[in-house]
Length: 403
Image 1: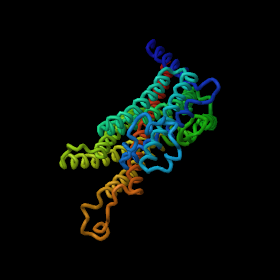
Image 2: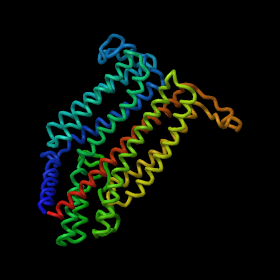
Image 3: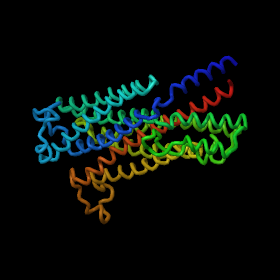
Image 4: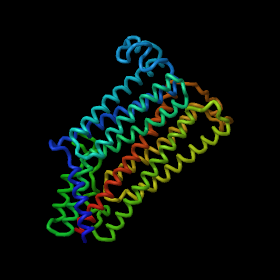
């Protein structure tokens, strides 16, 4: 009994630290959302730099042809060659991301009491700095390996700030409030179902907005934790606990698979001069096989979680499944714009298709494939973080029930 009381006290203390800022304005959420809206285009532009072989179009760093990055003539930048335009623009956007990352750290220390959230903001800033240095060293040393590492660390930055976005959202707090309210209703029976629904509706979050909530209604139809129209019975509750526990592990495994897939893609984009045709073929085959494995795993996880009671998770899972499907099609299109139809040269259109190296629209297809890969990783991390939070919510329920 003492252990249960101790657990309840520890969890309650954690929940007090999870409160939003005193003024009720989720500034950290807003700044984190801003940096995510900048990092994803930065990934896209970085992919365009690689696709266009523009990484060495500016031979010095941190300057641009001897001029300070901010003082380089705008007219020369805009009217110069395309590779100069996108490389210098990439650097400017990276600098902007760095400045916003500094602001995120300041806001985190001013408005947050959770030390781990502050540490996460600092980690994000450090990763942005490392990413910038890697990009600069790639230019100074002219090393293709550094170019590949630079491309592989960008999705990590995106993923870290995604965790920070979830942790600073209003949903992070209200998911506990809704859970506690339902537990009170189930135990005391003092509220009717209409009152419970009203309370749930009042605390539920909406789409990404300034109020700090990032998606969904929070709960399917105002139902219990165990799914649509379900009751708060013990069997349903146990089923929900097992579902969330499995989903939490599954989403993080999926995130690791998605990152490994990004590394394979980076190897294909930065092929080593020492690589043999057999090594390239094996990498391509592994890349294709893993894409379908990720799709299957994602489909299984979504089928398990779609009736878990949290619309934020079920809708995000469906979004991820759609992104993976689109990514597979983009991968096929990327192969076509780079290599044509090597297996269908005897049939109609494929036989007459001409590959245009570094074509404008072909580059956008390839960049879309790269950027969508980072978006898949971030969505998987979002689901893993959100599922962990719901699992923590269930621990909060159990601790209060034993108190």
